[in-house]
Image (tube, rainbow, N blue to C red; front, side, top):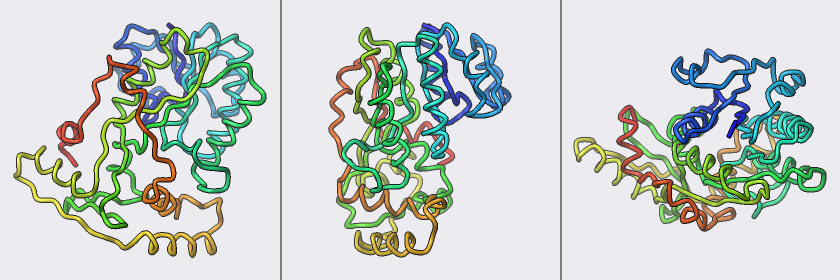
Length: 301
């Protein structure tokens, strides 16, 4: 297959490219700067279409020409997920592409609703528009938290790598659902390679689940007991909801990134979007990474 990956230089796009090439597929990328990719990966691409941004229609038309499948790996900005993804979908339709994997890789937002959680509104909006206006049926994949993102992003500060401290709200009994980038990439390529991939639909997978205590225990095992970890309780579920309510009253929704982590906390602790990873067994060729293995892959954490 010739696979187009839009947003190939991003957190999900690059591992998807590597997974596709490892499975014998050809990969074309579209993005603003090919230099963001490792030199080895750039050399392995079928081609790279340089784009000025999500509204560059000429670049989109060149990118989708003669491809068998499209993976939209855009980041989480609303304009990318709604406007950018719709433009990509329309270009794919015009080019006769039959397989389209939409940006998703979240908790299962089909269990929520528009206006519930700012970060999921763009996904729901694109999903609704595609459902009623496109003959092309996207694939959506639910993965829980992207593990690599949780431990490296500056927004939520869940993990302090200097003090080896995990911060959390609640009673510590609720399990968090996570999937690693490598596993996401493997599942994504398997999904678009299925004989009925053009039928679209929903895929629910995971790498592992853990409570805060289970995470710190796995970390210490991965470091052979040579490093001690710590847990820091930041408050109850009610405390998180109160903080979120105040933030929404004082901060514009345009700046929701400043507080949306609290909304994630609320719904993760309530189990609003919890799902069963029923499709892991559907792809036996993907070996799920364990939490301990994940920590071994990231010694800098």
